[in-house]
Image (cartoon, rainbow, N blue to C red):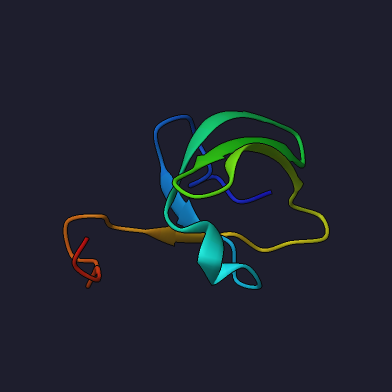
Length: 64
């Protein structure tokens, strides 16, 4: 389990960059609920997907 995946953490899905930045809503075991900018709230199984924790202050974000 990734101990950085706590409510409020900002993440990206490595295989779905089009989903945008996501905020962890809850994390119970390997089940993490994330609210993504462009995909909405999704349940991610972190035993199958390694979410990337990001620092939103240092992110290079496209305009718009």
